Length: 49
Image (cartoon, rainbow, N blue to C red; front, side, top):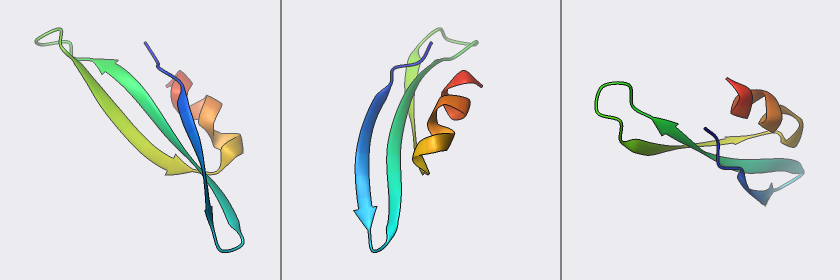
């Protein structure tokens, strides 16, 4: 399950995006949030895995 919360970040000449994904733990069933900063075109691939 993925929560697509994307914020655009600008650092110098690079454009970056912060993506937040909600992941369910197989042991406890609790949800945790995983954050990553990457290029905007890599967000959909990251959310799918």
